[in-house]
Amino acid sequence: MNRKFHLWQEEKVILALVNGCWDKRTAEEYSAEFKTIAAKLVNSQWAHIVYLDQWELGVPEIEPVIRELVEWCIANNLRCAAQVYCPHMVKRYQLERMITERTDSFERRVYPTQHEAFQWLAAEGFALKTQDLRQKAS
Image 1 (cartoon, rainbow, N blue to C red):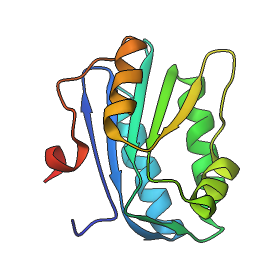
Image 2 (cartoon, rainbow, N blue to C red):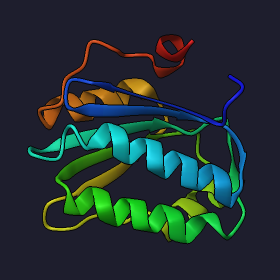
Image 3 (spheres, rainbow, N blue to C red):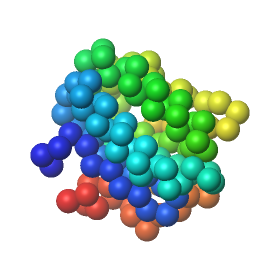
Image 4 (cartoon, rainbow, N blue to C red):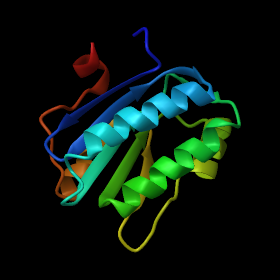
């Protein structure tokens, strides 16, 4: 994967693989591409799953960009967000600084395996054929 992210849509879910260390430009490109894909979904509830094991954190300047994207998503009917990564305290700290955990209409959960994340999304009404983010993106 040459780019630092890969985004695609299946059903009412946006799937993402992210990797490397992010700078502000990468965060802005991710936000713009994410919003372009999500624009097709905003008239009903939708979900997001992201695989973060290969992500190596980001510079502090990415945080306001990602916070704005999260606010936009929640305002535009994002219902569930599943983050998949092996436990990592520093990664968790930066993600929690950028991404809301819960509102009245939105919930974010963190899972150590894709299987658990896909199960949760299915239980919330967002079942997918894809069950392996890494295989689908290659």
